[in-house]
Length: 414
Picture 1 (cartoon, rainbow, N blue to C red):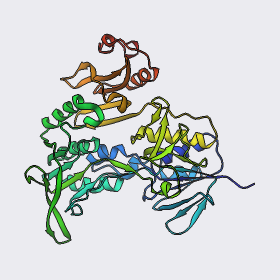
Picture 2: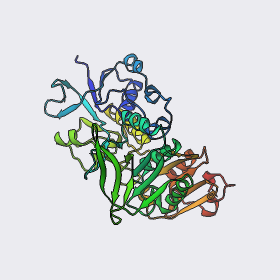
Picture 3: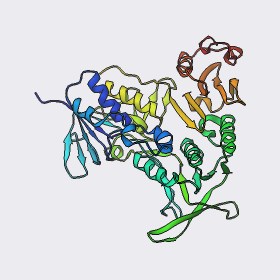
């Protein structure tokens, strides 16, 4: 008999979780993982948090598994290797060195890439993106000496977390954003305003409702070097030694699209994470599956989704009955404020949050309630409640707002 081979295209957390799950579920065929980076799979959240803020951290501290794990579990990992074509006629993946590997089933876990600047000066030295472990190391080296003028473009989670780290190193920080309130697309204007106040308390300057026109640069020995950021506010120029671009990410769908798979804001997939080709599955940032709880497609870029969808896709590849319905979850650490968010941003978008706890003291839980049921919750410097919040969301039951906002009433009794 010919041994079956499952090929995982991608080398991130979703890929590592899928490989681990295949072995945990008893699959004894070949498992091959193809990653374009030089590292084995690693965790991305630390890249804008503890790894970026601590020069003593080593790359291996971010790894999902040490190198030996893959050998011990007979998972063949190709690092620094780009999969350039997914051939669905001969069922093979063509690699960048013009070799190929056959597969019985394939998992697309190619992740996402940062949105890049397209404007004068965008290629100047001193412009940084944050997506990979190497990106984080380069940015850390630039920030750690302190005393630099840092301009952050974007008011999402990456922008705000890197702003906090930059201030922690003693740099001056200005954040530029299109919106009126930071983080409003993720947690709404009320919570966004709280985070804006936290950053202002730590000396961060904001230039909001601004468009960036150009990155200004001067000639240096190795080429143009950043000197400032020009906005649409009467030609305002914000002095800068370092520019951090945090404008979101786009899914890496190229190999799937070229193969003829259905693609729209990611690889389209069923709730079982099966693509438009029955032999190809998708997981992580790149997958845009049917979400049973929402009754429509929902793509999530957070690390918990990489774990959950990687696990679910592996089980689906093994023929198990899968309906991926994990409640979305992510967390953020900024200065001395930590938070966890669980729930559905699209359902929370048109609702006003209600609070329990001390909002002014920044120890509280916010809930978003739609149609009488909790659709999202965010705990700020309040711990060991996220599981209860997720249970409440998953229950879909009507809640009593008076109990929900009363700190003395257990969350599950609201």
